[in-house]
Amino acid sequence: MSRPRTWKEQLNKLRFILPLRCGDCKTRFTANTLIWSDIKYARCPNCLRMDLNSWSKENFEASWFSGVKMKMGAHLWRCEYCRLNFASFRRRLEVFSFRRWQKLNDPTIK
Image 1 (cartoon, rainbow, N blue to C red):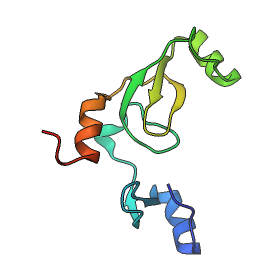
Image 2: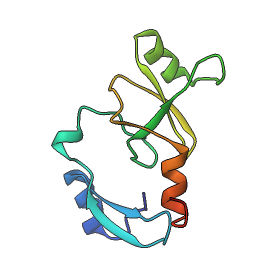
Image 3: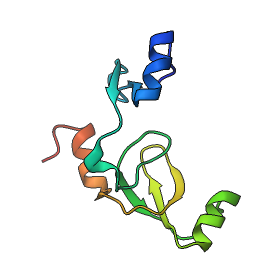
């Protein structure tokens, strides 16, 4: 995500239209981040990606709030792009794979 620059971008946050920045080309743009068909799936709170891996509480130290969620039965998800571990009650849409990520970053890989 990118920081809002104008008052119009601040107001658009209330309508779920956020300023974003492309991780590859660094182009800044605004997009609607509330898609009703995706509301039931987990999303990284940092970069808003939906391809997530799972993680175990034995390998990582969870924050206090994530610990409370874990005790209530939340799923443990990890965003491999921004390396954020978080807990969510929603299921994931798609599983992260390094092969897919490598294909996106290197077009010569088939």
